[in-house]
Image (cartoon, rainbow, N blue to C red; front, side, top):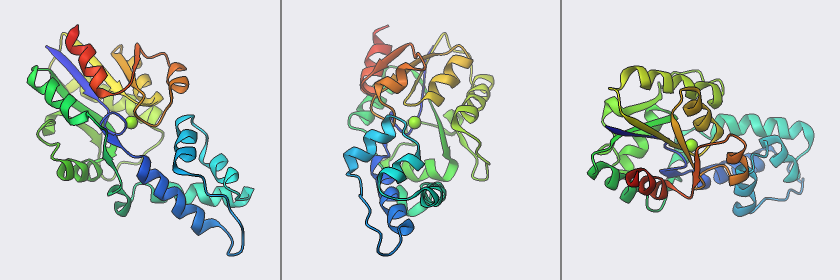
Length: 226
Ligand SMILES: [Mg+2]
């Protein structure tokens, strides 16, 4: 049996608009009333996220001072995973077609994400994604989980998945960050990184995934050709 474990944000969902709206909100909330700031364009902002520029640095390059940049990144952390902002997430083009294709090919499909249960449910309902991922193929965080860092939490999820899922002859992981690549490599799972998410090719290369592909569609085509 062939198995595909896919990350959610990056391969399936585009979170760039949510992150950008939160950036705008935090910039506005943090600046002093008469302080001029230089709001980044969405393209500039997302390019910085993709090259893994720290939030504090993004705040500084938007015109905030050192102390404000601390407050900015704290507010950002408190805001980015709150309900009103999830409505800005959208599907990555071609993701649904790719999921249909793997499903029709009889590949065992699982999702592995640092989203909490309610955050995953929100998108599942909005985009009718439950049809691809039954409950015993969903690996996410509980609503009360205390996050540390994705790069530490994700391998824990992977360990749980590998202990619980029935054995597969061949498993691929698809994800868009260093956390995905690290989780897969720690457990000797083959991993494809996608460029449709929050890291650019240069960042992905640093973690040596088996392959770097454009998006989930390309990943699925490669897996099915094997
Ligand atoms: Mg991701």
